[in-house]
Structures are given as structure tokens and as C-alpha cells.
Image 1 (cartoon, rainbow, N blue to C red):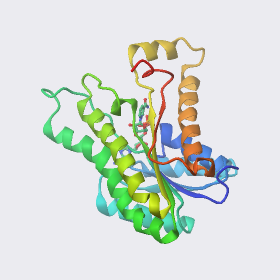
Image 2 (cartoon, rainbow, N blue to C red):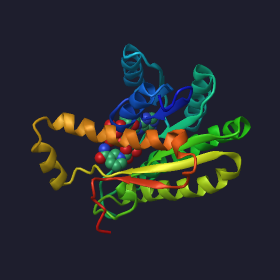
Image 3 (cartoon, rainbow, N blue to C red):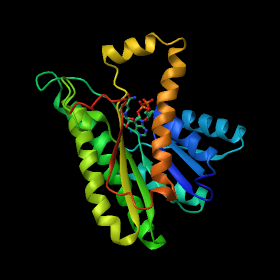
Image 4 (tube, protein in one colour):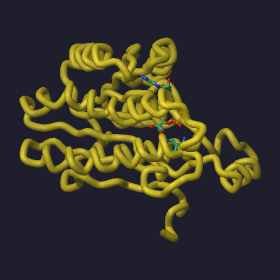
Length: 243
Ligand code: NAD
């Protein structure tokens, strides 16, 4: 019960890493609000967590929309009677080169994958200051620390997430707001796909990777990480070890 009594909002919590994180946080005693563009998926996942004995609510929200973000934070704050932790995890992928990625796709990936975090943090920051602190966790990517062909929009956004994390950590230090990010490395390169395909149960192996990312978020969210802020924790099975 490493998060007993804590209240957490997880964006993009209906699927993948966000879903695994919401589930793990609830299993560790947190009350969880799961926000997602897929509101039905968020509700369904909250229901599954409640069926396992956890406490969770689902919220429909679009992190690309300033009013929706404000409403998401208001509703989560009201439903959970406050918030201690926010996991800014929602994001979209994009592929394309400078030649092929359309200008509006560039704007969109920067908006959803980077500006949305700024938006959410602005909505919650004064409340964390008034409450005497809080924990902000962001999902970045190894794509934010190494260049990847055909991924310049996504990589630029994720590199921005790493730097936004560090700057906000410095801004928040005096008021007890910790800000950290995790850089997952599960990138569907041919090598990684070959690894998963070789497993007896490829889907279970993918879920296990999501659970490892959730475990990293759990550590950073917990009081065990009280002295940790401004870090970018890489969880990539050694993908970037040779850098
Ligand atoms: P996923 O597609 O399984 O989940 C993303 C969730 O975000 C979905 O439920 C989706 O509905 C939601 N979402 C998308 N746009 C939204 C919006 N505008 N408002 C609210 N919700 C929105 O993806 P995932 O693989 O679990 O990725 C989660 C995070 O991890 C992302 O930030 C992603 O960039 C990052 N990441 C993933 C990997 C990977 O290999 N899966 C690697 C590195 C980083």
C-alpha cells in the first residue's frame, strides 16, 4: 500500500501504459481518476478496478482542449476530494519526415504530446501550491532522448516533455511540487517485434512491459521518491545503454 490515502489523476488511462499505471496505483491504495478521450474506455477500466476492490472513476476528457482540461481537473478534484498526483500520459504517435509530415499534423502532435502537459499543469499548479505540494509525472519516451528517423514531430514533442519536466521541477521545488518523467523504450522496431513474437504469449509480454513502466511511476509517485525531482527515468531494457 505504497500510495495509501493518495489521490491520482491519470490521463490516457483507458489503454496501455496509462491503464497499467491506474491499475497499479489503485492496487497500492490510491483513489484514481482515469481520464481519456475514450470516455467509455475510461469508465470501463474504472469499473474493472472497482471490481478488483480498488476505488476509481472514469472521466471523458480531451487534453487537446483547454476547457476540457480545466473541467477534467475540476471533476477529478471534486470526485476524489483533492488530488496529490497527476500522471500526464495521454499522447498520440505520428510518423513522417520533414517532407511528408503535414504542417497541421506537426501542430497536432506538439499540441497533444507536449502542450497538453503544460495545460494540465497550469490547471492544477495553484491547487498544489495551496495544498502545500503535489506530484506531477509525465510520460516522455526514449524518442525524446535519441533521434529516430521519421519521428521528428513525436521526438521533438517528447524531448520537450523531458525539458518541461526539469524546468517545472525547479519551479516547484520551493513549494513541495515534485515533477518527474519516465522514458519508456518499448518502440516497435523490428528487433523488439521479433522479441515479442518469439514469446509464448506476446500479448502477456507486452502487458508485462506496461506493468514495468507502471512500477516506475509508482516509485516516483511514492514517498520513497521524496528527494527525487526533475529526473527522466529511462525504462528501456538497455535500448539506449550504448549512448
Ligand atoms: P495507448 O494508445 O495504448 O494509450 C494512449 C491513450 O491516450 C489512449 O487511451 C487514448 O485514447 C488516449 N488519448 C489520446 N489522445 C488523447 C486526448 N487528446 N485526450 C485524452 N486522451 C487521449 O498508448 P501507450 O503506448 O500506452 O502510450 C502511453 C504513453 O506512453 C504516451 O505518452 C506514449 O507516447 C508513451 N510511450 C509509449 C511507448 C510504447 O512503446 N507504447 C514508448 C514510449 C513512450
